[in-house]
Every structure is written in structure tokens, then in C-alpha cells.
Length: 427
Image (tube, rainbow, N blue to C red):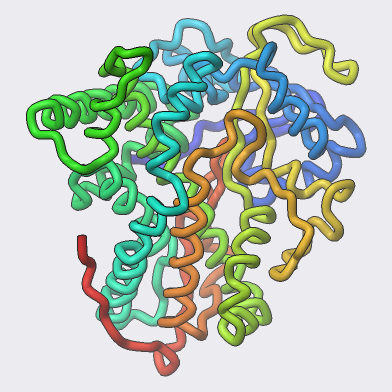
């Protein structure tokens, strides 16, 4: 799977022609958001089918709650249609659909009951059941890194990106050994496929076929996993449609993997470049849960999209029916009107009403699981690699667009400070 991005014209005016795939936006969008808040808090572009980009906290929260006119129905991404791949100014019509991803890509009343179906799987109690596995997995991954003898490791590919696919696979009762295939599918849907629609459609089709096969297996052989639970559920006395089940599984895999590995990778990037924070967390590990909230705020990975169902005048912005709105939660979390010193990571920040998991009825249902994975991943890394730095800042690569996080993260680990010891992964 290639990481090549299509060549697009450079941005000359971010207020009227922004590009979420521009190299400057991928590397560090914070300065762009700062300028837009002052010049044009809700920017517009015709690139990638056209969209609007709010940058203020209050605007993003208000838009997230405008569910009567800003729909979450699929597609909830900004990208060109299949027959205009690589054209940043192409309209979106004509794109073929694969499988929906409820509840995140649905409106009420479907959203209401479809969200209710999955909430038990992500309750604090259910999440706690996955913590021992996650911790053992993180130790196993570091065992493998230490066994290689390398003093520079890729903390993104070989650590952060390995954790969520296996945790989600375990939750769904699917083969954890398919983590590389899951990663390819997720990147094809949420990252590379956003500028390569044929690739995105291919991955979505393959995901649908994969989950339909898993569903047929659970119908014949039900187990103690989320797929079996969804198949056993009833809505108004009727079983849930199989395509709906497949769509929810699709959401679990795609949304549950990329967002969390991006957050873990961003956290390790920060700790590798801020030794004072690394040393403080090692000295006071009880601070890690608070630090996780701050790292989520500062490096929020997800920008969802909404679709206007009617013409809307938003603070003088003439949003037309069919327009896309990028729910810029990362930008909202850097708004100085909401957060003191928003561009500074304060790992013991107490007032932290971040919206990294969204806001309103579509707030991430899996936030408990994501927090747990992130916290455990950081705890185990600091325990086993107490001294580490970024090996080559220029070599770090970032995915961007609607999910931002490091994809190559070379970290130099102090060989003498490594803590050995293996913990076997148990089911």
C-alpha cells in the first residue's frame, strides 16, 4: 500500500482555499488554526469536494449539536469521488457506497438504538476486563523490540499501531493474528483512501465481505464476543439487520484502531521530545491518567464531518444543503478562549474540558477503551524504556486529513536503562 499523496496546487489563502492534505497542515496545523481564528473562524474550501472548517471551541461544539440540520449519515469524510481520484476540486457525487458505520454515521432514531446496543461493550466494567490483556500485550511488544537488539525502534509501527488492532479483534472475537491486514484496511479507509477513492472503496468492500463471513460464522457458532451479542440483540422485538451488524463491526475496527494508535503514537512523540514530562511521569506514575487527558487535548487525532441537510447561515457563513462541515475537534482543543496556554502541554492541567472524543450525541462510545489502551501503553513503555529520545525529528512522518498521528516514529532507547522482563499475552 503506497503512502504517496496526489500532487495538488499550493494553498495561497487558507481562509478560502484550505487543504487538509497540504504538507504544512499535516506537519503542524496549529499555526494555521491560530491564523484562521483571527481572520476567518469558519474557513471554506472547494478542494476535495468542498467543506467548511470551524476553528473555535464554541463554534465546533455548537455545530456538533446542530443534529437537526447537520447530518452524520455516511459518508462522513471529505474526499473526491472514485471517477475523480486525485482531483482536489472534484465534486463528491457518484461515489459508490460499501457499508455504513452506525452509530457514528447515522442520525436519530437509528443512532439512538444502535448506540445503545454497543454501550455495554465499552462500559468501565467491560473495559477493565480488557486491561490485563492489553498490559500483557504491551509487554510482549517491548520484549520483541528489546530482543531485536536495536537501539532505535519505530514506536509507531512496532508498538502504537500493534495495540488497538489486537484489542479490538479480541473484543469482536476475530483473529488477532490479522493485525497487519486490519492495519492495511484501516489506512485504506481513513488515511490513504481519502485521496485515493478506488483504494478506499476496495478496502470498504473487503471489510464488508470479511465481516459478513464472520457474522455467518457466529450465526452457526455463537460465542462470547460483540458480534454474537449484536446478533442476539432485538430492536422493537426484531433482530438487528445483518448489514447493520456488519456496519457496526466496521466502525469498531476502523474507528477503534486508527484513532487510538494515533493518540498513543502522539503521546510517545511528545514524551520523546519533552524529557521533563517523561521524567515527571516516571517519578509520579499516578499522574499518568491526568497526563493522558492533556495529551488527548493537545494531540486530538480525529476530525469528523457532517453534511448539511438544509441551507444554514452560521455566523454569516452561507452553508448550503449538501455542504460538508469538518468537525475540527483538534482545533477546538487549541482555542485560547477555552484553554489557558493552549499550545503548551501541561500534564497536570486540571481544567480540561477537551472534546477529543467529540461532543453531543455522537461523542465516541469507545472512549473508556481508548483511554485504557493509551494509559496502559504509556505506563508499560515508561516502565520498560525509562530513557528515550527522538532519534531523527526530520524522519518522523505524520498521517493527516481527518485522523492525525505519527506513522513512522524513530525513537532512540538507552540500552543500559532498558528494563527486561516478559509477560505472556493471555486470553
